[in-house]
Image (cartoon, rainbow, N blue to C red; front, side, top):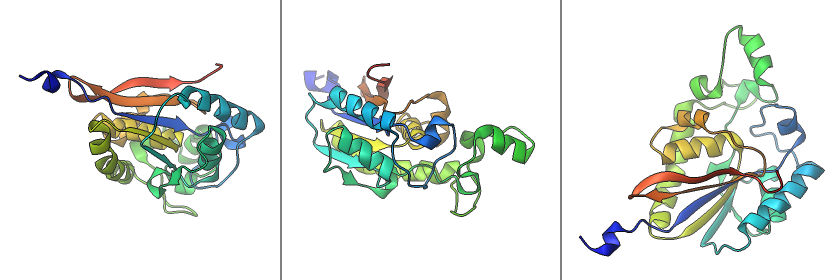
Length: 206
């Protein structure tokens, strides 16, 4: 076997969750509602940028939602390319509600990872739909990362957790295993040729 065949790809897919917003601070589900960062969120986005500054990137993408675009800008990437597949899970009828409020409304336990979200002012998304969206993105990005490229994306908590789940072959529901704070930097890569998480939920100045 050639040495090259024993070497893991050095490409990485680096994930950055947007900075704090008023809704994220209070635990309200923020899907497609387009709200800005708080002052703290903007500051922490700049700190996240210091974790990325020494890296060379072949591709930088962002969710088109304001909180992600602003995070990319504050982190030092004002030219990040918007990609609609990076938007947050569409919470539909649960938009703006906290988990306890949703549970009270339903009268039974609920998590996004098991039940998804029904239609409201927006269509909502099921676990299967988010899995398909994440897989569509990875179908494009995974070959580039496996070829050694460094890819940076700015997105949202539930979608990035879902993306990590799909990366590992768990579907979007696998995201339930990963806690992800605002402005956190995470990294997906390879070990022994298989997709792994190489770093998770790194926040500067915690």
